Length: 166
Image 1: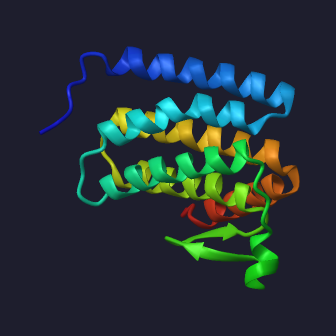
Image 2: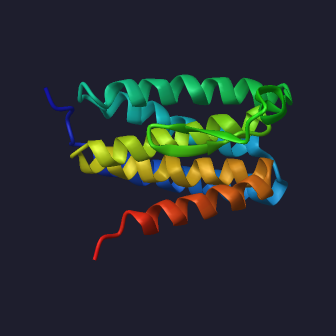
């Protein structure tokens, strides 16, 4: 059964404004935790709204991932995954996820899961939330490691251009 949409627009607008405020504060203070905490309500609402059999796993996985990210950022846990695995990255659901600081990996995974949700869902509010989560995840990545942010941006642009068919 479809979730009620009575309050979906005001909730999505409020979540958009909340994330924008969190991103401005987080970017100005160079504090990824602020952005992650302001992104959390969008992820929770996304998990609530998602219903499809092929998408519900992505939204609940995203909720687990953001909770892990909060712990990693709050406790300043650093771990170089690329050096540990001896690999620069891995393809996840057809998208290249670069390795590096483990705190950057989780928002990257959230971005990939958001793209999956955006592509596989028909719900306008789920798509709206997916875009918010992608933007918020990119802001977290930028705050943690601007070099990896640039690399992810290049990969995203390249993937996007490869998917354009004239």
